[in-house]
Length: 78
Image (cartoon, rainbow, N blue to C red; front, side, top):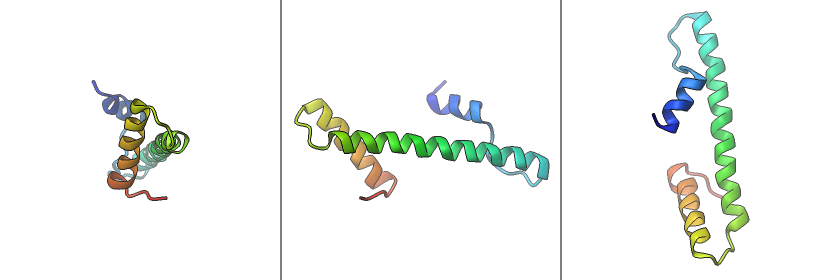
């Protein structure tokens, strides 16, 4: 089981089905998932911000990977 599988199982289904009571539950799941994604992206952004001037190779590697992810995969620019 991957981290993705665990998170989906913990949060629950987010896809609406057209039934008000179930969709209300799923909307709550959607809010939880969006909050989690926001917090995770903030963690990645902080990694880049706090280490952008580092000279250590392993730190630079992490910064470059995270920065590329934010910019290219998510379309987040400064």
